[in-house]
Length: 384
Image 1 (tube, rainbow, N blue to C red):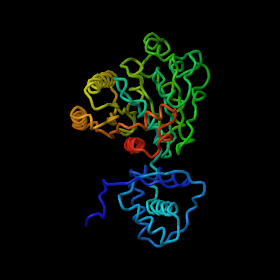
Image 2 (image 1 turned 90 degrees about the vertical axis):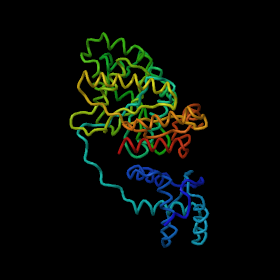
Image 3 (image 1 turned 180 degrees about the vertical axis):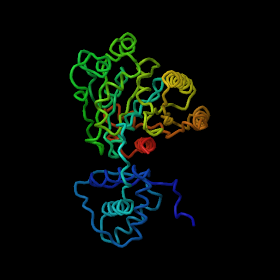
Protein backbone atom coordinates (compact mmCIF):
# COMPACT_ATOMS: atom_id res chain seq x y z
CA UNK A 1 0.00 0.00 0.00
CA UNK A 2 1.46 3.37 -0.98
CA UNK A 3 1.21 6.58 1.01
CA UNK A 4 -1.23 9.16 -0.42
CA UNK A 5 1.58 11.73 -0.51
CA UNK A 6 5.28 12.00 -1.12
CA UNK A 7 6.88 12.32 2.37
CA UNK A 8 9.70 14.43 0.92
CA UNK A 9 7.22 17.00 -0.43
CA UNK A 10 6.14 19.12 2.53
CA UNK A 11 4.66 22.55 3.08
CA UNK A 12 5.06 24.88 6.02
CA UNK A 13 2.10 25.17 8.37
CA UNK A 14 1.78 27.84 11.06
CA UNK A 15 -0.67 27.74 13.96
CA UNK A 16 -1.04 29.25 17.42
CA UNK A 17 -0.67 26.78 20.28
CA UNK A 18 -0.49 27.22 24.07
CA UNK A 19 3.00 26.92 25.57
CA UNK A 20 2.13 23.83 27.63
CA UNK A 21 0.99 21.89 24.57
CA UNK A 22 4.09 22.91 22.57
CA UNK A 23 6.37 21.82 25.39
CA UNK A 24 4.58 18.50 25.87
CA UNK A 25 4.87 17.76 22.15
CA UNK A 26 8.60 18.53 22.08
CA UNK A 27 9.33 16.48 25.19
CA UNK A 28 7.30 13.47 23.99
CA UNK A 29 8.83 13.57 20.52
CA UNK A 30 12.29 13.59 22.09
CA UNK A 31 11.40 10.72 24.43
CA UNK A 32 10.19 8.62 21.52
CA UNK A 33 12.98 9.68 19.14
CA UNK A 34 10.55 11.19 16.64
CA UNK A 35 10.80 14.30 14.51
CA UNK A 36 8.19 16.85 15.52
CA UNK A 37 6.90 17.14 11.95
CA UNK A 38 6.38 13.36 11.77
CA UNK A 39 4.54 13.36 15.11
CA UNK A 40 2.21 16.13 13.96
CA UNK A 41 1.65 14.38 10.62
CA UNK A 42 0.64 11.16 12.40
CA UNK A 43 -1.64 13.13 14.70
CA UNK A 44 -3.38 14.95 11.86
CA UNK A 45 -3.90 11.73 9.88
CA UNK A 46 -5.39 9.99 12.94
CA UNK A 47 -7.52 13.02 13.85
CA UNK A 48 -9.08 13.20 10.38
CA UNK A 49 -10.31 9.60 10.73
CA UNK A 50 -11.37 9.83 14.37
CA UNK A 51 -14.66 10.95 15.83
CA UNK A 52 -14.89 14.61 16.89
CA UNK A 53 -12.53 15.24 19.78
CA UNK A 54 -12.90 17.29 22.99
CA UNK A 55 -11.98 20.94 22.61
CA UNK A 56 -8.42 21.89 23.59
CA UNK A 57 -7.84 25.14 25.47
CA UNK A 58 -5.78 27.24 23.05
CA UNK A 59 -6.03 30.55 24.91
CA UNK A 60 -2.79 32.49 25.09
CA UNK A 61 -1.38 30.59 22.14
CA UNK A 62 1.77 31.68 20.35
CA UNK A 63 3.24 30.83 16.96
CA UNK A 64 4.10 27.21 16.20
CA UNK A 65 5.19 26.00 12.79
CA UNK A 66 6.02 22.67 11.26
CA UNK A 67 5.97 20.93 7.89
CA UNK A 68 3.16 18.65 6.74
CA UNK A 69 3.08 16.54 3.60
CA UNK A 70 1.71 18.55 0.67
CA UNK A 71 -2.07 18.36 0.56
CA UNK A 72 -2.56 17.34 4.19
CA UNK A 73 -2.81 20.98 5.25
CA UNK A 74 -5.81 21.50 2.95
CA UNK A 75 -7.50 18.31 4.12
CA UNK A 76 -7.04 19.35 7.75
CA UNK A 77 -8.77 22.67 7.04
CA UNK A 78 -11.63 20.91 5.26
CA UNK A 79 -12.29 18.62 8.24
CA UNK A 80 -12.02 21.54 10.67
CA UNK A 81 -14.64 23.44 8.68
CA UNK A 82 -17.00 20.45 8.62
CA UNK A 83 -16.67 20.08 12.39
CA UNK A 84 -17.28 23.78 12.95
CA UNK A 85 -13.95 24.48 14.60
CA UNK A 86 -11.04 26.76 13.77
CA UNK A 87 -7.92 25.57 12.00
CA UNK A 88 -5.87 26.25 15.17
CA UNK A 89 -8.26 24.08 17.18
CA UNK A 90 -7.91 21.31 14.62
CA UNK A 91 -4.12 21.35 14.90
CA UNK A 92 -4.31 21.40 18.70
CA UNK A 93 -6.73 18.45 18.77
CA UNK A 94 -4.53 16.48 16.38
CA UNK A 95 -1.49 17.03 18.57
CA UNK A 96 -3.47 16.14 21.70
CA UNK A 97 -4.61 12.93 20.01
CA UNK A 98 -1.04 11.99 19.10
CA UNK A 99 0.12 12.65 22.67
CA UNK A 100 -2.69 10.54 24.11
CA UNK A 101 -1.90 7.74 21.65
CA UNK A 102 1.85 7.84 22.30
CA UNK A 103 2.36 7.84 26.09
CA UNK A 104 5.67 8.69 27.67
CA UNK A 105 7.94 5.66 28.10
CA UNK A 106 8.80 4.59 31.59
CA UNK A 107 11.64 6.62 33.08
CA UNK A 108 15.03 4.97 32.96
CA UNK A 109 16.63 3.96 36.27
CA UNK A 110 18.55 6.76 37.94
CA UNK A 111 22.23 6.84 37.03
CA UNK A 112 24.65 6.47 39.90
CA UNK A 113 27.32 8.39 37.99
CA UNK A 114 25.53 11.75 37.98
CA UNK A 115 25.01 14.01 35.01
CA UNK A 116 25.80 12.84 31.50
CA UNK A 117 28.78 14.81 30.23
CA UNK A 118 28.99 15.80 26.57
CA UNK A 119 31.78 17.94 25.18
CA UNK A 120 31.87 19.58 21.75
CA UNK A 121 35.31 19.90 20.23
CA UNK A 122 37.51 20.34 17.21
CA UNK A 123 41.04 21.66 17.05
CA UNK A 124 40.02 23.84 14.08
CA UNK A 125 38.23 27.08 14.86
CA UNK A 126 35.48 28.54 12.73
CA UNK A 127 33.52 25.33 12.16
CA UNK A 128 30.53 26.50 14.20
CA UNK A 129 31.26 24.33 17.22
CA UNK A 130 29.90 26.94 19.61
CA UNK A 131 26.58 27.30 17.77
CA UNK A 132 26.07 23.53 17.64
CA UNK A 133 26.93 23.07 21.33
CA UNK A 134 24.52 25.86 22.27
CA UNK A 135 21.73 24.59 20.01
CA UNK A 136 22.06 21.04 21.29
CA UNK A 137 21.97 22.19 24.91
CA UNK A 138 18.84 24.22 24.20
CA UNK A 139 17.21 21.17 22.59
CA UNK A 140 18.13 18.95 25.54
CA UNK A 141 16.64 21.49 27.94
CA UNK A 142 13.56 21.91 25.75
CA UNK A 143 12.89 18.19 26.02
CA UNK A 144 12.85 18.37 29.81
CA UNK A 145 16.48 17.74 30.78
CA UNK A 146 18.08 20.06 33.33
CA UNK A 147 21.10 21.17 31.33
CA UNK A 148 24.22 23.15 32.14
CA UNK A 149 26.06 24.76 29.21
CA UNK A 150 29.69 25.62 29.93
CA UNK A 151 31.70 28.15 27.94
CA UNK A 152 35.15 26.61 28.31
CA UNK A 153 36.65 28.66 25.47
CA UNK A 154 38.65 31.73 26.63
CA UNK A 155 37.40 33.63 23.58
CA UNK A 156 33.95 33.62 25.19
CA UNK A 157 31.97 33.49 21.96
CA UNK A 158 29.26 31.32 23.53
CA UNK A 159 28.76 33.70 26.45
CA UNK A 160 28.52 36.77 24.21
CA UNK A 161 26.32 35.05 21.61
CA UNK A 162 23.75 34.30 24.30
CA UNK A 163 23.70 37.95 25.36
CA UNK A 164 25.78 37.71 28.54
CA UNK A 165 28.99 39.33 29.66
CA UNK A 166 32.21 37.43 30.26
CA UNK A 167 33.26 37.21 33.89
CA UNK A 168 35.66 39.91 35.02
CA UNK A 169 39.26 38.73 35.09
CA UNK A 170 39.53 39.46 38.81
CA UNK A 171 36.28 37.65 39.64
CA UNK A 172 35.81 33.98 40.54
CA UNK A 173 35.68 31.76 37.45
CA UNK A 174 35.78 28.15 36.35
CA UNK A 175 39.52 28.45 35.68
CA UNK A 176 40.16 29.76 39.20
CA UNK A 177 38.11 26.93 40.70
CA UNK A 178 40.13 24.44 38.66
CA UNK A 179 43.34 25.93 40.02
CA UNK A 180 42.17 26.25 43.63
CA UNK A 181 42.32 30.04 43.49
CA UNK A 182 38.62 30.87 43.91
CA UNK A 183 36.49 31.48 46.96
CA UNK A 184 32.79 30.71 47.15
CA UNK A 185 30.73 28.17 45.25
CA UNK A 186 30.94 27.54 41.51
CA UNK A 187 27.12 27.32 41.37
CA UNK A 188 26.99 31.02 42.25
CA UNK A 189 28.41 31.82 38.79
CA UNK A 190 25.59 30.14 36.85
CA UNK A 191 23.11 32.29 34.95
CA UNK A 192 19.73 31.08 33.62
CA UNK A 193 19.10 31.22 29.88
CA UNK A 194 15.66 32.73 29.33
CA UNK A 195 13.14 32.31 26.56
CA UNK A 196 11.75 29.52 24.46
CA UNK A 197 10.34 26.24 25.66
CA UNK A 198 13.58 25.42 27.49
CA UNK A 199 13.16 28.13 30.15
CA UNK A 200 13.86 26.97 33.71
CA UNK A 201 15.85 24.01 32.36
CA UNK A 202 18.99 25.66 30.93
CA UNK A 203 21.86 27.45 32.68
CA UNK A 204 25.13 28.94 31.46
CA UNK A 205 28.53 29.00 33.14
CA UNK A 206 30.09 32.03 31.44
CA UNK A 207 33.65 32.27 30.22
CA UNK A 208 36.33 34.46 31.74
CA UNK A 209 39.39 35.92 30.04
CA UNK A 210 41.61 34.31 32.66
CA UNK A 211 41.01 31.03 30.80
CA UNK A 212 43.73 32.16 28.36
CA UNK A 213 46.19 31.46 31.18
CA UNK A 214 44.76 28.09 32.14
CA UNK A 215 47.11 25.87 30.12
CA UNK A 216 50.22 27.59 31.47
CA UNK A 217 48.96 27.56 35.05
CA UNK A 218 47.91 23.90 34.88
CA UNK A 219 51.45 23.04 33.78
CA UNK A 220 52.95 24.62 36.90
CA UNK A 221 50.18 24.31 39.49
CA UNK A 222 50.93 22.37 42.66
CA UNK A 223 47.24 22.38 43.55
CA UNK A 224 46.42 20.03 40.67
CA UNK A 225 48.59 16.93 40.92
CA UNK A 226 46.94 15.14 38.02
CA UNK A 227 46.26 17.86 35.45
CA UNK A 228 43.56 15.94 33.61
CA UNK A 229 41.29 15.79 36.67
CA UNK A 230 41.06 19.56 37.21
CA UNK A 231 37.81 20.16 35.35
CA UNK A 232 36.11 17.14 36.90
CA UNK A 233 37.01 18.21 40.42
CA UNK A 234 35.72 21.73 39.81
CA UNK A 235 32.39 20.53 38.37
CA UNK A 236 31.83 17.69 40.82
CA UNK A 237 29.65 19.82 43.10
CA UNK A 238 27.28 20.65 40.21
CA UNK A 239 26.67 17.21 38.75
CA UNK A 240 23.80 16.20 41.03
CA UNK A 241 21.86 19.29 39.95
CA UNK A 242 21.81 18.46 36.23
CA UNK A 243 20.90 15.72 33.79
CA UNK A 244 23.37 16.94 31.16
CA UNK A 245 26.51 19.04 31.31
CA UNK A 246 27.49 20.34 27.87
CA UNK A 247 30.96 21.81 27.40
CA UNK A 248 31.95 24.07 24.51
CA UNK A 249 35.68 23.35 24.29
CA UNK A 250 38.50 25.61 23.07
CA UNK A 251 39.99 24.96 19.61
CA UNK A 252 43.28 23.73 21.06
CA UNK A 253 45.19 20.58 21.93
CA UNK A 254 46.58 21.77 25.25
CA UNK A 255 46.01 20.86 28.89
CA UNK A 256 42.54 22.46 28.84
CA UNK A 257 41.39 20.06 26.16
CA UNK A 258 42.94 17.16 28.06
CA UNK A 259 40.86 18.06 31.11
CA UNK A 260 37.69 18.20 29.00
CA UNK A 261 38.41 14.85 27.33
CA UNK A 262 39.11 13.23 30.69
CA UNK A 263 35.88 14.72 32.04
CA UNK A 264 33.73 13.05 29.36
CA UNK A 265 35.38 9.63 29.74
CA UNK A 266 33.23 6.59 30.47
CA UNK A 267 33.23 6.27 34.24
CA UNK A 268 33.11 3.06 36.20
CA UNK A 269 29.55 1.72 36.15
CA UNK A 270 28.52 3.97 33.27
CA UNK A 271 27.26 2.53 30.00
CA UNK A 272 29.28 3.14 26.85
CA UNK A 273 28.27 6.32 24.97
CA UNK A 274 26.39 7.72 27.94
CA UNK A 275 28.96 10.52 27.96
CA UNK A 276 31.57 11.47 25.40
CA UNK A 277 32.65 13.91 22.70
CA UNK A 278 30.77 15.25 19.68
CA UNK A 279 33.11 16.47 16.95
CA UNK A 280 31.82 19.42 14.92
CA UNK A 281 33.25 19.61 11.40
CA UNK A 282 32.55 21.08 8.01
CA UNK A 283 32.56 19.39 4.63
CA UNK A 284 36.07 20.42 3.66
CA UNK A 285 39.63 19.09 4.07
CA UNK A 286 40.91 21.31 6.89
CA UNK A 287 38.27 19.90 9.25
CA UNK A 288 39.52 16.41 8.46
CA UNK A 289 43.12 17.42 9.18
CA UNK A 290 42.05 18.96 12.51
CA UNK A 291 40.11 15.85 13.43
CA UNK A 292 43.19 13.69 12.82
CA UNK A 293 45.08 15.78 15.40
CA UNK A 294 42.22 15.59 17.88
CA UNK A 295 41.96 11.82 17.36
CA UNK A 296 45.68 11.47 18.09
CA UNK A 297 45.20 13.43 21.31
CA UNK A 298 42.32 11.19 22.36
CA UNK A 299 44.31 8.03 21.61
CA UNK A 300 47.30 9.32 23.59
CA UNK A 301 45.11 10.20 26.56
CA UNK A 302 43.24 6.90 26.61
CA UNK A 303 46.53 5.01 26.35
CA UNK A 304 48.38 6.99 29.00
CA UNK A 305 45.57 7.02 31.57
CA UNK A 306 43.91 3.73 30.61
CA UNK A 307 40.45 5.24 30.20
CA UNK A 308 37.71 4.95 27.58
CA UNK A 309 36.44 8.05 25.79
CA UNK A 310 33.35 7.57 23.63
CA UNK A 311 33.15 9.44 20.37
CA UNK A 312 29.42 10.08 20.07
CA UNK A 313 29.56 11.24 16.48
CA UNK A 314 30.23 13.96 13.96
CA UNK A 315 27.99 16.93 13.27
CA UNK A 316 28.69 18.29 9.79
CA UNK A 317 27.86 21.97 10.16
CA UNK A 318 26.94 24.64 7.60
CA UNK A 319 26.59 22.18 4.75
CA UNK A 320 25.69 23.48 1.31
CA UNK A 321 25.57 20.98 -1.55
CA UNK A 322 25.61 23.90 -4.00
CA UNK A 323 29.31 24.29 -3.25
CA UNK A 324 29.78 21.29 -5.47
CA UNK A 325 32.18 18.38 -5.44
CA UNK A 326 34.30 19.54 -2.49
CA UNK A 327 31.27 19.67 -0.19
CA UNK A 328 29.47 16.55 -1.42
CA UNK A 329 32.57 14.34 -1.55
CA UNK A 330 33.74 15.56 1.88
CA UNK A 331 30.36 14.74 3.41
CA UNK A 332 30.56 11.28 1.89
CA UNK A 333 34.03 10.80 3.43
CA UNK A 334 32.70 11.71 6.88
CA UNK A 335 29.89 9.21 6.46
CA UNK A 336 32.24 6.46 5.33
CA UNK A 337 34.04 6.58 8.69
CA UNK A 338 31.02 4.85 10.19
CA UNK A 339 32.23 4.77 13.79
CA UNK A 340 31.74 7.39 15.03
CA UNK A 341 28.75 8.09 12.81
CA UNK A 342 27.54 11.36 11.33
CA UNK A 343 24.66 12.09 13.71
CA UNK A 344 23.42 15.16 11.85
CA UNK A 345 24.07 17.52 8.96
CA UNK A 346 23.29 21.18 9.66
CA UNK A 347 22.34 23.11 6.52
CA UNK A 348 23.96 26.44 5.66
CA UNK A 349 21.15 28.86 6.48
CA UNK A 350 20.86 32.33 7.95
CA UNK A 351 19.22 31.28 11.23
CA UNK A 352 22.44 30.65 13.20
CA UNK A 353 24.07 33.88 12.01
CA UNK A 354 20.97 35.94 12.74
CA UNK A 355 20.64 34.45 16.22
CA UNK A 356 24.25 35.37 16.95
CA UNK A 357 23.70 38.86 15.59
CA UNK A 358 20.70 39.54 17.82
CA UNK A 359 22.25 37.66 20.76
CA UNK A 360 19.42 35.19 21.15
CA UNK A 361 19.40 31.40 21.51
CA UNK A 362 18.72 29.73 18.16
CA UNK A 363 15.64 27.94 19.52
CA UNK A 364 14.22 31.32 20.53
CA UNK A 365 15.10 33.22 17.36
CA UNK A 366 14.04 30.52 14.88
CA UNK A 367 12.50 27.68 16.93
CA UNK A 368 10.90 25.90 13.97
CA UNK A 369 13.57 26.47 11.35
CA UNK A 370 15.49 23.64 9.74
CA UNK A 371 18.64 24.28 11.80
CA UNK A 372 16.65 24.17 15.05
CA UNK A 373 15.14 20.84 14.02
CA UNK A 374 18.62 19.45 13.36
CA UNK A 375 19.71 20.53 16.86
CA UNK A 376 16.80 18.54 18.24
CA UNK A 377 17.97 15.57 16.20
CA UNK A 378 21.47 15.83 17.70
CA UNK A 379 19.98 16.06 21.20
CA UNK A 380 17.81 12.98 20.67
CA UNK A 381 20.66 10.92 19.30
CA UNK A 382 23.12 11.70 22.08
CA UNK A 383 20.49 11.28 24.83
CA UNK A 384 19.06 7.98 23.60
